[in-house]
Amino acid sequence: EIKDIRSFTGKILDPLVLETMVDGEIIIPPAGNPALRTVNREVLLDFIYCIHQLKGSDALNVIRLKRLKEKASGIIVFLKKEYHMK
View (cartoon, rainbow, N blue to C red):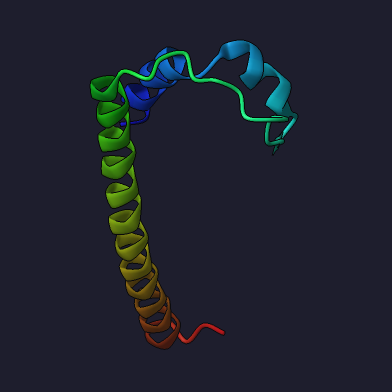
């Protein structure tokens, strides 16, 4: 999903503007309202769809990770009890 988004990002956003936005791990919003490389509706809708897919996957991953954490906590409690660990 991220690979798809990256290919669209290059088609939609000006790389010269993107370069001014990155400072190490910090993303700085660009000054003004820079123009997109394209305003083609189909390209933009495809990009939005990719973002939507990634957003949904991320939400499901959060749920799955919470469940795994709960299971891991239960296993730790079991092992501590079973093997008389602190």
